[in-house]
Amino acid sequence: METRRWINQSLPQTLYIASILLYLRAGFLVLFGAFISPLGLALIIGSVAGGYGLANEKRWGYIVALVVAAFGLVPFALAVVAEGIGVLFELTVIINLIFPVALFVALVHPMSREYQRIWFS
Image 1 (cartoon, rainbow, N blue to C red):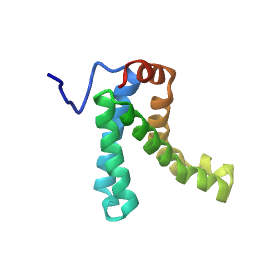
Image 2: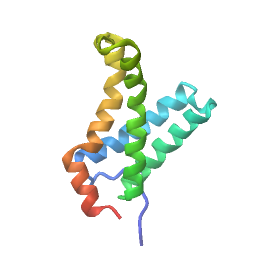
Image 3: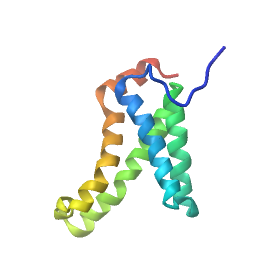
Image 4: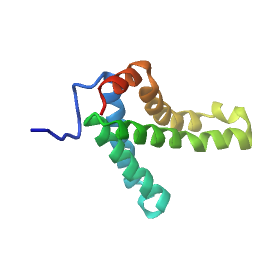
């Protein structure tokens, strides 16, 4: 019998943390009203689907999680293009950048990539 789970503690630490960060991201998006816009709703659904896919060791879950994580970095990249690299040294930007960077780094970490390449179906 195949089990479905929301959290998988047997994953490597990087993927386990990434799945939790995806659920937290979805929760914060709901909390701050992102579900009103189609893009926000897509990010919420993508975050939950990515976390669930990671927890169940599915390759599609890893890909969805990676796309959602990369999409979270886009506003900061656009800010750098519009205002210059100096914008990254503002305290509010640094604080807001911690969460998306941590998620992206956890997913592209060599341990995460190797584990998903070998074990994910």
